[in-house]
Length: 465
Image (cartoon, rainbow, N blue to C red; front, side, top):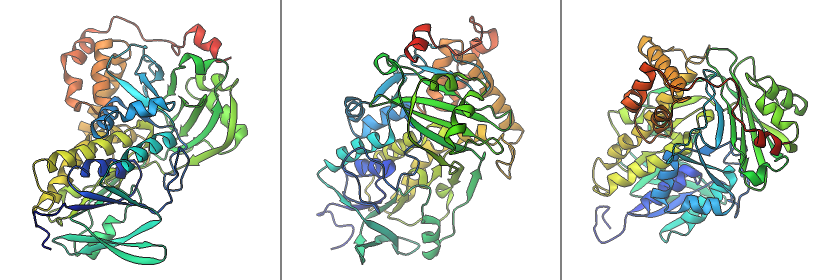
């Protein structure tokens, strides 16, 4: 049957069943029969799996991501909350020190609510919702081997499953396989050049340990605690306490080259107390550790500029971390994955999957949310020694100083904080930082002074002891 026939439903194959792949499948299910190819055997519930090595570390979903999640899968964040996750006000339910060592006042920006839970819980809820879609099929224990087609069009995906090799025909193949994507090699095999790439690697290492929440903190909706690293001081060190489901805390510590945390349990508490502020270390004194310490160094910002390719094959699109992966400290990966899927869906609501040039339009649309998060991440990480071969130019350094001032203003002015969160949550473009809400208090000065210590209430301190 011809591929442009109108009497059959188009087909799509998505590589990867992590968050980006699940969002892609949810978006494509409106237009096609979707097959998700996943090399792992997926767990039935909130359990760890090999294909998500970052799952043990702290994750949160900014309000821009919460909106995107619910746009793709209506009510999905309510499902997460029903299973123990939390929607927290930023900064009202958060105690946070900015990279320039300014403590944020706990103003509540009404619509900025971030989703907080373990990554295992989030993925299990997303999987359940996508499995419930009538025209989505999962192929587990199946490895993508390469593309079928030529430089003009991709027509199928070769896979291996149970020792057998199969070819899955598709009108659209989507690579959502993450940092380890094989797309650059696959494009070369089709006779196309590799994409231009850039890496900004601050050399950040992470160490994470799970704790039983101390005292009565679980009963009181204890705030998130975040001490961010200062790029002006190398090595940059920081940490976060993320209260999650089942009366537990995820505690992730981080450090750049020369100041990395380790997997040594005896060093974990000392590292937390040695941060620019000892608040995390003090809170851990009464918390019970659970299990071993997980570490990772896979934190570089890495981007592939597929949208700039002069030639692009029909029938192929890349989404999520396979386009750009970010330092996890900024918490933007999940939000960008959902926003990329929405960009794809919005294009396909006016353009056929099989129309010539559709795949290139999809790739360019997906690049927009990627670019917004990329600029925020590398604007900070590029300042660390050795992070990149192309250090920030004069304009980028000027912008970094402006953002530092915006953070300092937002830390003590609620209007400026709303503008800052609109950008950091990926809800609005960076131009929002130049709005009157930010510029007026920045120029004429916020009313409130900077805080000299972490804004934890006396009752919150007592609940943690």
